[in-house]
Length: 478
Image 1 (tube, helix red, strand yellow):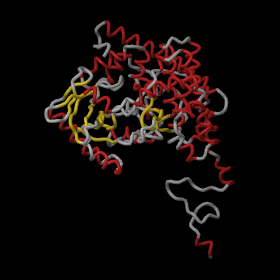
Image 2 (cartoon, helix red, strand yellow):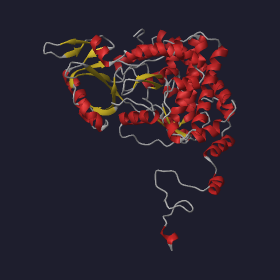
Image 3 (spheres, helix red, strand yellow):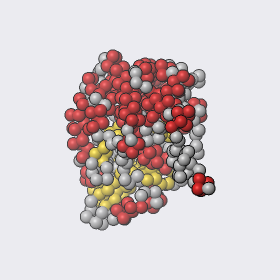
Image 4 (tube, one colour):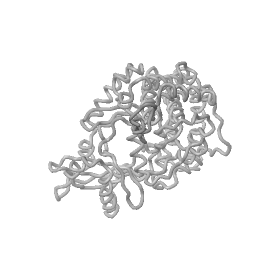
């Protein structure tokens, strides 16, 4: 009779299975059903790791110019020549602005079906330093405009390709560029295996720091990272405001125009952005509200950002505390992810997104261990926006400006960071089982990366020729 009073759970357990938690299983059942690592290894039969070397471009692929024109739709028209000019600078810059085109092309490559929260634009320049709530520095992925749930392979292949292009731009020989891609994948694979062996909580909270750099055998980068860190510590809202604002007669401050990058906006537009911060307050953690309540909004300006983001609506908002110290928030338009239209073709569900800013913010928090503590979202004139701190001690390494012998070190570091980010959503035991101990995956993805880097150089050449022929407008050097 006593046994009848036990809740239904694992064999012999008093505790029932609780939704949201893993199911308790006894050892015999676990062996029958297979371990997560075993399920990952079993995926190799359906998708051999060597198959990732293949690149079969889908029929009807748009040419480079048409792809750029399509990606410019919905952007601020007078800014799109700046975007085109930035993409035309180098093949690596073209890759940075063409995440949608690469997603289109990756539809023809094999995927295991294991889902992860993707950065969506995991090229080598989208990693960097930023400040935590206590003023410390963290290095991690730091751009999530395209974040979405999808095949983990897409992020890894984009990262590996970007290392080949960055290496070529840095003047490295072809063997070094290919090795950078190979080492990127190897670091991803080894880090995933490390995370799979760690206690779940330790793996989840693995912080990206000097220890991770050492684990990824990227010690030659430590000097470069130290120099970037020194600059990042002074890259703050207060310093930006000191350079970009001026005193007003009423005792406040306002932005000073620096066209075309920074310009003032009409009063009605500024008021709409400021009003949107009311909705934003409802999206940040409640314990941050007393902090934000100590600031007053003084001014709003439009500021051009990034390469892929040029032409989206992006504002900086100047807030001052009781001492006149500045906090600058960035209110940046959140467009639908360019990966979304291609996910169904590889068997991934494309959920409806109620608010694109929310998608970006929640995706970022899902991938990072430490995120900007003032992240949130809002709506301005019926358009979705994300909100974050501007110049939050941000610093970055330009991978194309590294010494040729440091490119593979940078690849190892970013590969390890990407694995840690993916392990927040995909079970590292499954991915470790699939990726395995040997370098079969490393060789395959490196081969694809070289092939796609060649394709990107050809696309870049098409764009440059089209600009010269007057087919598409470009503004260089901005």
